[in-house]
Length: 398
Image 1 (cartoon, helix red, strand yellow):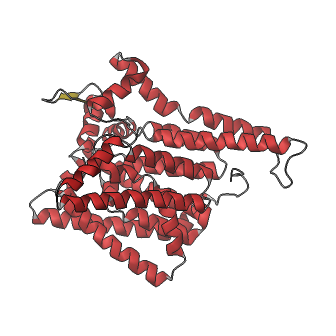
Image 2 (cartoon, rainbow, N blue to C red):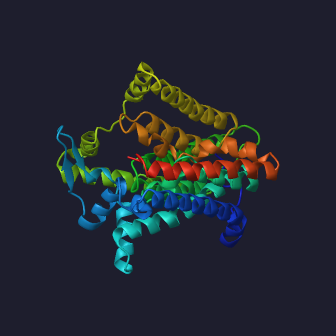
Image 3 (cartoon, one colour):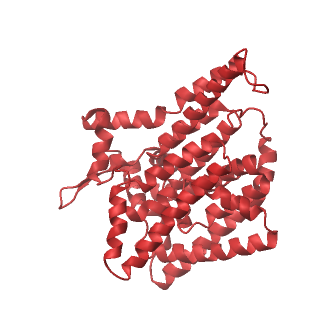
């Protein structure tokens, strides 16, 4: 599971040709989602582009790009919403786009997300193709595209950018490209707090590789064990480990210095948003409260089924012996999403980067006939497009 350098990756041109069906399908699904959104918004006399680029978190990213850090909103209940809660890579890219083009910061965020979503789809395909083959890779990409909250992939949010960086970092680990994996993990750590999951995947897999090599070097090593890695490989692996945590660690330490609250200053910033990690206690109470009346009890049942499905998919991945970096990454992303203490409506969006959860379903679809799998994905894609349009024109993602 940790002998990752034995399978060569295809050339870049060959990899793009191999991924072309998945990328074409992904682009079609996202185009359908945007068409549904624009039609629904027009019918309600709303501006669909504004919903994608100038509401909720998108506004906070634009403010960081335009004004820098230090902006905050003080609510009547005493909470302080600081833009320090938003990691800097997306605002930096928005500022770069605005600097080299006539586009606004909001336009830049939309363009970055558009490009990042395609890069993320390619990365999801690359990982799934490497583990289970091309057909499963195409199914994995389409499943990721038709998620109920898939419209977020087209918003000026950081989910698409983060998923792209995470997926390609995981692929680099799987193919033994340790410096690339570390550099991408560094960038993921500058994008979202959950970038720590990518760092953990790099570190745990690297440590496991060192341990495996050490065991193989012992005189009584198990027959057939992989030979110790070359010094150059070990050095690159170590360098990747050094690079991986620099993004997240650097930003968190900078926030602590900027606020004067030390290394834990970022936690204070998150507390101002009433966001933290409580092991799922607050979420459990939120679900339990649904059963105090009807029909809210139906929503409670739906939430329980949703959480159970996520856990079942992760267990299925373990049973299918998914590679170690995928299990580490997915486990941490899932735990952070489900055990956060606030913004319960955001949990589906926060789970979106955990794309390896979809691999058991992708593998099952890959084993069915093409016509049947296409019909299933097509029907779900239509439902996802309609739901995304309804969602953004209603409460939308907080």
